[in-house]
Image 1 (cartoon, one colour):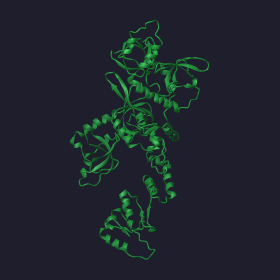
Image 2 (tube, one colour):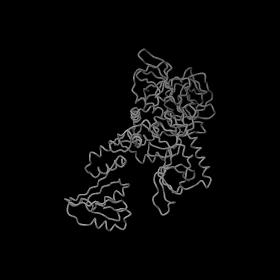
Image 3 (cartoon, helix red, strand yellow):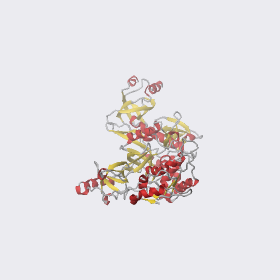
Image 4 (tube, one colour):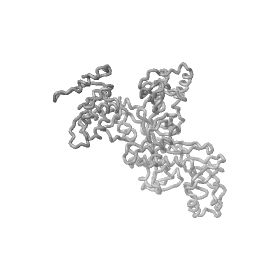
Length: 599
C-alpha cells in the first residue's frame, strides 16, 4: 500500500486495508510520506524503515510514534512487545551518523560494529577533506578525544588548508604581527573578526589589511542610497549572499530559510555576516539583492584562536562563565597579536594583548593579555603541546610551515637594539627602582611598560621550558642571550660582559633590571624567537644634586634605600641626559621621596 499528499480522498481506504485482520505471518507494508503521518494516525506498526533520513527530531519522533502501541512497558515486568526502527544511511548522512550513535549509546541498545566502522571510514576518507571543516577541538586544543563519533575533519589537506586570500592582492598572513578586532566570540579562546593591519616585524611600519573592505562598505552605502536599488529578495536560497539593510549595509549569507508565517515579509531568516562572523535572525524584508560586483571580495571574517591554553580538568569545552567574561572584555576592541600558525581561514595567535595609549604620558601600556586572563581565571591551564601537534599534521599533509627563524638571526640587528629611556620633556614619570648601587648609580623601570616586560618574560620562559637545550651554545663577549636568574629562577635577557674563567663561568648584565651576576654555561641559552621585540627596560640613572658627606657613599645607604623603596612606585623627572656615557642614560631628580633629603 501507499499513501501521499495526493491521496487525501483515499485515506480512509488505506486505513481500512491497514486495520484488516490477516492470518499470522502476513506482513502489511505501507509506503508513505511524512505529511500523511498525522492524518493516518497509525500507532500499532511493528517496524518503521526510514528510507529518507528524518530532516528533524520532530519528524523522527513522529515516525517512531507509529509503533507506540508496541513499545516495551518498562513498568510491567516481562513485557515482550517488539518494535524496530531501521535507518538507511549513506556517506551523505555523515553529520547525522555521530548523533545516531550517541542516541543508541544512551538507550543502551546493541550497536552494530558496522556503524562504528562506517563512521571510522568516513573520518579516514581522503576526499572528505573537501567536504568537512576541521574539528573545532583539534583547532582549539590540538587534540580531539572523540575521534569515533566526531564529525569534524582530523586530517589536513594541502589544498583546503593553505592560507586563503582576503583580496586579489592580499593573502591571509602566516607570520608576523597583526592588529585585530574580535567581533564574534565563539568561546573563551576562539573568535571571529577582522585583521586591521599587519607587519612582518614589530619594528616595521604596519600595512593596512582592510582598505578593500572599507571601500566595499562605502560603495555599498552609495549604491543603496538610491531607492530603486533597494530591492527586497523575493525567492530566498540557502548559501546565497545578500545585502542586509541595517544602520550600515552588510553582506550576509543565508544559512536557514524563514519559518512559515502569516506574513512572508515579516518572517525571520537565519543569516551569517560573512565579514564579521556573527550569526543571527533577521526579517525577510531586510534582505536585499546584492549585485555581483559586491560579491567579488572574499569574506573578511577570519577565525582567531588563542593558542597554548586549554580548559582545566581535561574538559573539552570552556566554562560558559569564562566565555561570557572574555566576550564582554574583548568584543569590538583593537588587539595586537603575534601569528604562530595559519591554516585555511584560521590564525593561531600568542600573545593577544590590548594596549592603551596614555596621551598625557606619551606612552602605551599593556592593559591585559587574553591568555593570561584565561589562565588567571582558574578555568584554564597551560597547553604546551598545542601548536606542535598541529605542526605534525601539517608535515604529514605536506603543508609548508614558515621558517622558524633561529633566535640568533635577530642578533645581527644588535646595533639597532633599543633601550627604554626617560623622556626629557619636563614631565614626571612613574618608575620603580630595579637595582641600586648608590645614589649616583642605580637603575629604574618604567611602570607603564612593566606589564609588557612580565608578559615577555612569561613567553620567554614558556618557550625556553619547551625547548630542549642542546648544550652546544657558547656565547661570546657582547652577545645578547638568556640566563637563569639565581634569585627568581626565571630566564631573563642578559648581555655577556666577560668570561670569568676557563670553567665556563660568565659575568652577565641583566638588561631589563640593571644587575650584574656570575652564571655558569649550563644556565645560559640563546635567545628564543621574539625575545627582542621589547626595548631593554633597565634605565641607568643618577640622583641629581646629591653628594656624599665623605669621599664615598656609605655601604649602608644601599641597604637603606633598597629596603625602603623596593617595588614602590616613584615619580621621576629628567634634569639632564648624558648620551655619551653608555652606563649613564639619565641624571634626574626624584620627587616625593622624603628619604632622599636625608642622603
